[in-house]
Length: 148
View (cartoon, helix red, strand yellow):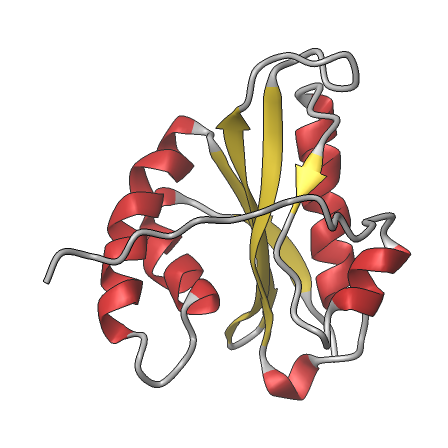
């Protein structure tokens, strides 16, 4: 089975959102994420690629470029947050996600981004580790519940 890659475009925002929010109860989140992603794709602060076959998109991966501030390890001041890595079930375990991630990271590195982070599912940890990602236990998170 053959497939090719192409960069995402602003009119792909709905498909990008579907990759990031693919659960049955994610309809509202998909709409909001697509509206958020569209201008960022246009501005170049969301970099993404799709894998496609003759019938359409079969996988995707992206990175949100975050204005993080320069550090010794990352003097450009941007960090890439890897997001929306998704492969259609019938296409999994064929190296497509790995190829898309390599393309995304190469594009980021061409912009002098030297720091990447992501949230990983248990199933994807092996893939990310093979690409050089390491667990980062020092990170913490605080979430504020929406007003009721």
